[in-house]
Length: 488
Image 1 (cartoon, rainbow, N blue to C red):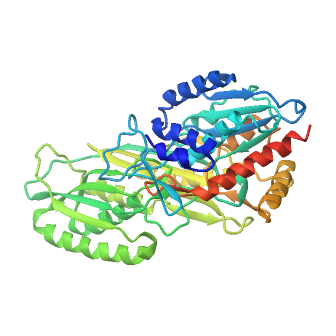
Image 2 (image 1 turned 180 degrees about the horizontal axis):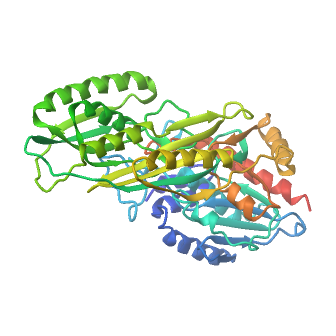
């Protein structure tokens, strides 16, 4: 499948990306791909091993005469975000990603593409395969579960890697190089809320908010995009005036993807249903006007459901308290950086929200360039949801990556970029959870940078990669490897 990828340039990179597209690899299900890569390494005569968590390392000796060059670690993550349009029957656990080219970009058919971080992984494999490339000692590090928990990086074995330079190939902008990133953590909220029987004078209704673009909860958090959880909670807040009682809720699928859809069931007084539907129709127009062209596809619908005597909505007070807490919860950009112009400092994404049989579960992803600010924002969640008796904890927290503008590796990159493309790259700090922060905490001696091709719409079915930028990315990576080989 995806045979057309073999005809793209550079073929050595796209051939490996085809393997990635044809091998299901959602987070937590990377085992099949690891086995394929190990078999490939054996065929290439390359040594490989895994650490205790399952992260894969493939090693390649230095080119003759370059044995004393600094060891380079090429790093990327094997997993991809599994997001599909509502009308897609794609099964990420078994179906390959179906791709197509349009207007100079590679897309997927109704799903995420996996260019994040598949393009970086494909480039690393291409470096390992390239017999004409002159290089120093190489270690290719492929981590697991980056998209869901940073589990691979957090559990990476210490005293395992030997190199002193690390190239993270998980960035998504042409002509840019990253030297710092935000840290983050998952804020998890759980509560069992009181309920009461459905009354004879109540009608069950289904409310759906769909049609949003979604996006990456770090790199896209500052954009004029709607968050389906935030907006549907606003609709529920509107219906409190009609004594609505929340029955169930489901919104978002990943804490690091801005939710595109959210659904709720509500019990309303039967004689208020028509007026409530009118209020929702008016709110739909309001929300569309507020989002404007930034996220113009919003659709808010409400329909009567079949009453079920076994359904127990929340009590009126519990429903009101929950909706109020969700309405007041931090969402989006909290603060812009005072030190790095144009970069978000601290943010939060209301990523995954559910309510079933009175059981509330919320997973929000808090990010910040300052670990202390991340902790402070998480503490606000604990203070807020503590008011309704919820239990709040922070999981999978990871440190940020402090910028080092004086990096020797950065200087070499900048010089080579200027020679290849007749301009120096933009040096950036990214509001996303690159694994560099975690890797740097385990291997403090590492000099690190991150770069990659142009990818847009990551973490959503709109994900795409620009073909021309992949060729530039490969040329830059290959030239940089040869420059570093001369540093011995």
